[in-house]
Length: 102
Image (cartoon, rainbow, N blue to C red; front, side, top):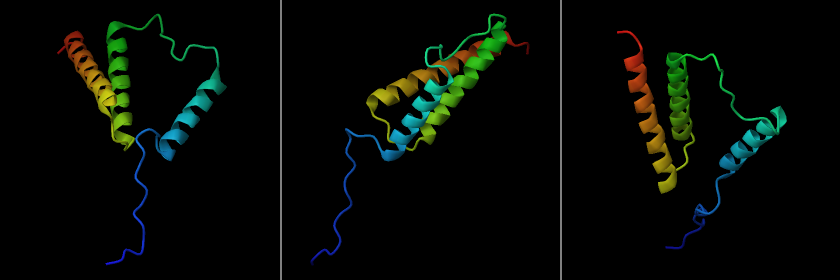
């Protein structure tokens, strides 16, 4: 049997997808536009322990959701980082549970 249409090109593991490149370009653009030399994150000196733990838990939750929402297949180093983030979220959630009155 003769095949009329060719197979689609196989994804190259060395190059990220076009969506990933566009996403990275947008993030880089907005980070530089805000303040190129400023720190990317500044902590409030008046933040209580409970508020700091709650904020850290929210940030870790967002990191996990953003990684899973990308739709990209994660390689071993990315999976390892995500595992560390999920472990840190568990520790922060546990500490937050101990810090809040029950």
